[in-house]
Image (cartoon, rainbow, N blue to C red; front, top):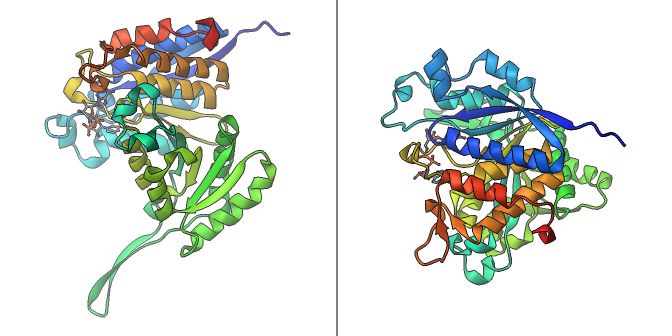
Length: 373
Ligand code: NAD
């Protein structure tokens, strides 16, 4: 058996606002996981967004793109400032922080976005759904196609018979559908092996192609139970019985809307990790929340969404499943006792902690298996 230590190259974008504080904690958790599970991580610091504007006058440099391409995966905090007060928002739109994010997604070919929605037992009060519905458990992921469909199709407005007519084209090719469906089936295999394709196949030709391609692929994944749901029904089912979902696969616009609905269903923004994946195993991992400039530098930010994003990186890009599980279990365990301010409810019996202490207690709780504790 090889005794060679597994080693990975990870790009780190601290970003703006609370970014440096939350990424610091996630990196420390990764290092501890590496020590326990026998791998090492080489970090490559990279600039993006506001901090890149400060240094180079633009939100994304070619250097950052090349560095990211040399890595196995990238972990990111969050970018952007307060649009009302930050001078970055006086710049033309193509030079603002968000342009850097769109630019890096495009440059790295990140076509699949994954947003994870988990309702933790100890945070059930954050869920706006009825207790009997929340009580069934919520743990699903939405895979949204990120680079095609209506948002990227041909757009035109012209005058017809004296009035303006606007058109947006919704188009998908078989290969665009297939490459994200592979990610969805693979994600289902790592989870509860249930995949729901959400579409509008009763009226949209593009949705019918999605069904055709995805159903043909199902024979390569005999263990995955595949079903189909119209998007209007899916929007209802997400609040009626979210426990039925494991992996949801859908096109760009449906995914945009459903993933925001999903973040409300589980309540706290400080808890939601996300991943954007390219061909192969490369991915960029970041919390779903923004850079929270209102609380930056005050040790108030909840680092758990970033720590959970790091766990996703271990699972989906680095194939370190055990370490990913251990981090997720550690987060569940610390929530029983510790809360950052955004999660704290009066009289809940937990201890209020800051960003750094929250990272520390996650590290202290990193163990191999539940019964090791
Ligand atoms: P936001 O998510 O940064 O903040 C919304 C509210 O949630 C704020 O009150 C904030 O304090 C709180 N919050 C967010 N994350 C938290 C955390 N980890 N712990 C505790 N509280 C947290 O959204 P916003 O205020 O609309 O945007 C701020 C900046 O972030 C803007 O520049 C925006 O463009 C940017 N942004 C970036 C990304 C990204 O990098 N992917 C995503 C969304 C927003």
